[in-house]
Amino acid sequence: MNDNETKFKAILETKGRETGKAHQVWLLAVKYNGKLYFSRRNTNSDWLRNAQKNPDVRIEFGGQSFVGKASLVNDISLCKKISQLKYEDEKRANESRVVLEVDYN
Image (cartoon, rainbow, N blue to C red; front, side, top):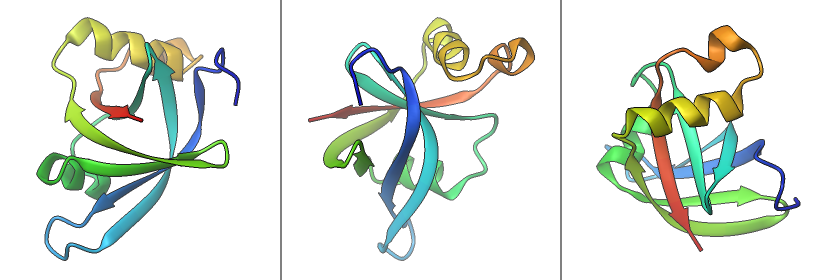
C-alpha cells in the first residue's frame, strides 16, 4: 500500500467482550494523519463494542500486521472528514457515523 492511499480493506481483530476470544472482521479503513479509522452508522456491531471494552486491537493490511490502541472519536469535524474520505457518494459521505480511531505501530 502506498502512503497516498487513504482507503482500503483491512482486517480488524478485537477481543470478544464476553468470551475474550479473537474476533476478526474485514472493514473498509481510512488512513489519515498517521492513524487508521473505521466507522459505522450505529453502535450495533460486535467489533465496535469489543474495541470499546478492550482497546487493544490488531490490524492486518498490505501484507503486514500491526497492534494498536482503539478509541472513539468525539470530534464531529474529524468524524465528518473520515466519512468524506471513505465514501465518494455524497449522501453516504455526509451521514452521521460512529468513528473508531486506531493508533498503531
